[in-house]
Length: 115
Image 1 (cartoon, rainbow, N blue to C red):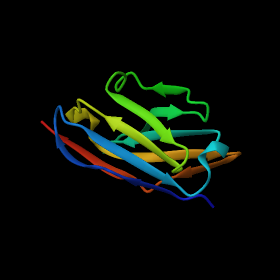
Image 2: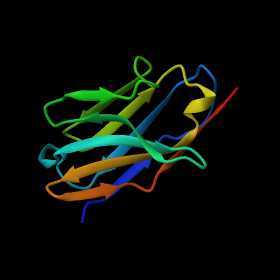
Image 3: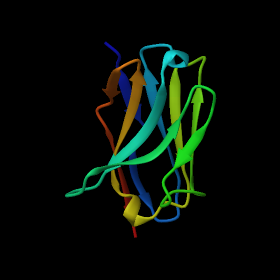
C-alpha cells in the first residue's frame, strides 16, 4: 500500500501564493505518473497538473503560467507552487500517484482564496 500525504493548504488572499506538498511512502522514481487534482464544491474532480519520472509536465489551461509542479526524488515528495491565486482556485487539492496498475490518492488539502 502506498500512502500520499498532502500539506500546505490554507486561506490566502487573491494574488497570493501557496505551495502544496505531497509526501509519498514509496520511491517516486518507480511511479508511472504523479499529479495534482482539485475538486470544488458541487463540481467534479479535475486534473490540475501532472509530472512523469523524467520530468515531463502538463497543466490545465486554467492554471498554466501560474502553477508549477515539481518533485524532489530524494525526499519522495511532489510539490505544487501556486502563484497569483484566484478565488476560482478554491477547492480541495488531491495528490495522485500511479504505480503500475494501481492508483493512489491523498486525503486532500483545502485551498481557499478570498477576493
